[in-house]
Length: 340
Image (cartoon, rainbow, N blue to C red; front, side, top):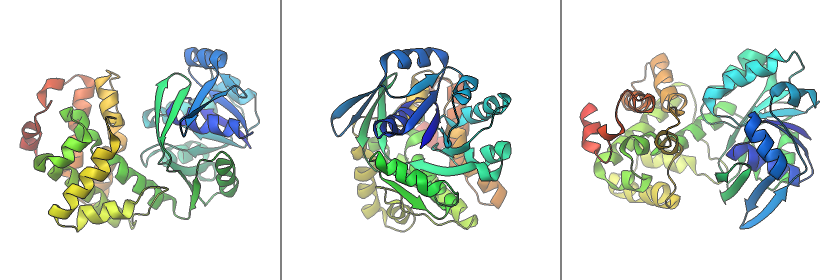
């Protein structure tokens, strides 16, 4: 298949590089500086401890150049959620035909946004559960292979599953796009915002009875919103989402807390969640509005109370923008609990 990747970050490099190694035609659109660096050095994809150099791809520093090098079967959006709007506008502004777009992004707002720009028949819902890291530009390491979910409601879905499995990415098809996407959102919420706000690893959050309460309420609010939307959690590739939902809703704390601490905290090692990385690297923005904020917004729309997700969203956005000092809550869960 012929792929155009919007973004050569961690997910774009991992999926695009793997597809290129499997013989598919891959083109990237990236920021000019990164495009120049990657074009000169190529990609380095590490899987199962083995690193392969990837040179059989094209990369351009603008959407117009990338589209002109087509045609493509599908464009893959591998950007942060807050960049989706501008990326779609840039594609449309070229005046060239835009292929169907596969969103491999976190959150539940990207597919509706893309559908609003391009049409509902131009969107393919996807989600990535494999853990990857990006040590440098054009470099990616597969830390734990889980897989990729692809919604089966598009004519290209079956071909995409086949192409991704050509590249050993463990792609699985799902009949219900929203259930798949909200199930991934549930997993993205675990420890993410609280870790950034308190500057603590996820293992500490789930082991501490004070912050454990916060994490459980975050998950319960999301599950309540899903129920109001008529959605049930589904297991994702390598990710037992239903067990997470069961632990959050029904298991007694003396059983659930040790299990979640081990599964969600200790299993991460020393790696911090994405919100922590974005906040403490000084990027000035995180995706909290698209994750915890989405739960709160849909809670407002469905009449489901979501005070914890709303508070975490507002607090992290204030810290990201500099309206509040990072020292306000650092290693101080009692200060955050006081707000709740």
